[in-house]
Length: 343
Ligand SMILES: [Zn+2]
Image (cartoon, rainbow, N blue to C red):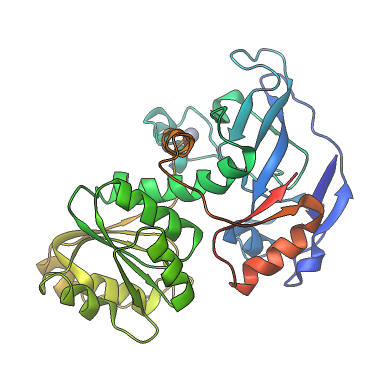
């Protein structure tokens, strides 16, 4: 099969090469999927550079986020037919550990991760087990499905499941111009919340407004805590989705009302953060880690996308052979929406 592979880790995007590699065959109890679209995630560029913290053997096919149709079915598999539109859940969970049995396969004790511990979606075919499959609604195109499935499900997990965002509340979303940020704006509006979008780029903030953000703040020249209090009669926001880390995380804690909740995903802006724990416990704030969604959450957002209630934002669609160019754009940070590979 054709795939975009790496044979070494490198800062240089051209390390990604379009090559022939062996096509995976389904073993008993498995299916293969003919991948039709794959999306670029930040974790892919980290993996290409060897920064992921897990070593791969070469050649390696990355790609955590893909969808396609079932191409071949191994012995003992029922309930699926060739041609079914599916996504492999990125957490290739064991199905039997205490978290899997509790419906939390996103924190499975022993899961493989698509494109990280097994070959992923930058390829024509991928292999997985039927309990990893998520069905894609017929009305949804492969490119739209893959553009939305992880960002919307991640935002859903963080805002709805973890931070319990509800109707009439005010929510602060940092890194609002990113993939999860733009998804979170739409989900928060759908949940009936007032949205404050924060980012470090005015152009992205204007686009965040077009997606439904009620208020915008550029945190390169304004303090988030002061801004949030100024528009909530000095009280602060009920809820926050924080995705930057560093001083932005500190300012986000300042922006939260007594009893408020924060979900945190990612810390590219600073992994070590000084927190005033006196302020933290006196305000009865809850901070909860998030970032990996379940199959149920992916199913939920796919049906909302199929209904037109959530609209994935695509920056550009590249052919698989141009995966290196897609990585280059990802690292330029000069984009709005997702980079998709048409496979
Ligand atoms: Zn498990």
